[in-house]
Each structure stands twice: as structure tokens, then as C-alpha cells.
Picture (spheres, rainbow, N blue to C red):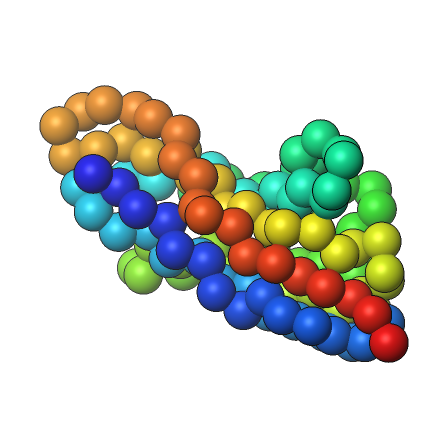
Length: 120
């Protein structure tokens, strides 16, 4: 079993910052890409940012210059530093990881989600 546990969501005023964390645990041999997606009410889940094992990154246009994704391979953890938050950034943020398990299976896993609210 592989589990992803997110933390760091909450309420922040427009212009503020939050840092999300996602720790993967379980029968992990290696993790390729890790990423963050978000889903606002009535909208589809969308990619926010992704980081591959070699630290190459992809960002959605709507977060470029404001959000930074990073990872600690030793801790199987991915982070999302979110600055200059806007009300439209409010959503449930989900962690995602492409994992190779110790028995050789490759699967994609999701965290349970963490709520980010941006409001004055």
C-alpha cells in the first residue's frame, strides 16, 4: 500500500502565502513524477505543478511566477510554495505521485486533498 498525506492548507488573505506538503509512505521503491492538482467547486481537476525525479518542473500558466514546487527524495515529500494568492486559487489541492512499488508495480496515487481558501 502507498499513502499520500497532504498538509498545509487553510485560510489566507489575498496576497498571502501558504506552503503545502505531501508525504508519501508505504511500499515504495521509487517515485517518478510528483505533482499538485486542484479542483474548485463545479470545475474539473487541473494540474497546478509537477516535478520529475530529475527536478524538471512544469507549471500551469495561471501559477507561473507565484508558485514553486520542490521535492525531497529522501523523505518522499513534495512541497508547493504558494505566494501572491488570489481568490481564484481557492480549491481543494490534491497531491499526485507516480510510484514504483517494492514488488515492481507502477501506479498513480492521490492524496485525500487539502482545502485552500483565499478570502479577506
